[in-house]
Image 1 (cartoon, helix red, strand yellow):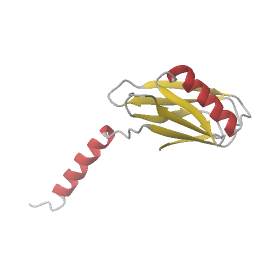
Image 2 (tube, one colour; image 1 turned 135 degrees about the vertical axis):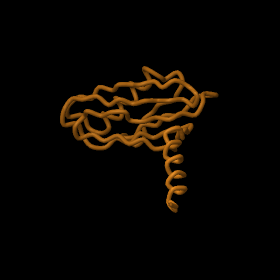
Image 3 (cartoon, helix red, strand yellow; image 1 turned 45 degrees about the vertical axis):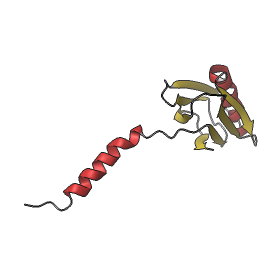
Image 4 (cartoon, helix red, strand yellow; image 1 turned 180 degrees about the horizontal axis):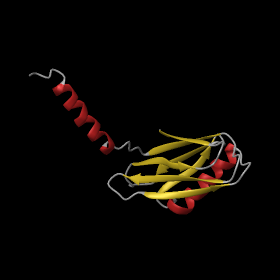
Length: 126
């Protein structure tokens, strides 16, 4: 019995299995904050340098913080925990730019969790 779809399905399965290992490294990332906090919560970010160990950064956000205040809190937490390796600044009030310093490797930054109701944080490569 022949299975004409077996090879394409197998190829697709192999591709899917390799996707998690494809890193989205960049030398600069933009974190876009939108919405205001409807309750206290924590935003957890993970920064992973290419070939290096990830660092998680927890950012406490207070109730009623607007998107600019959320961006400042993210900026301050990142500067405190990884500021020696990355340049961190706010842009347009509600965005946070994270750029590698010197010869640091490219990196990936991701939002691991967000318990702040009303706030969204998206990460984009620059």
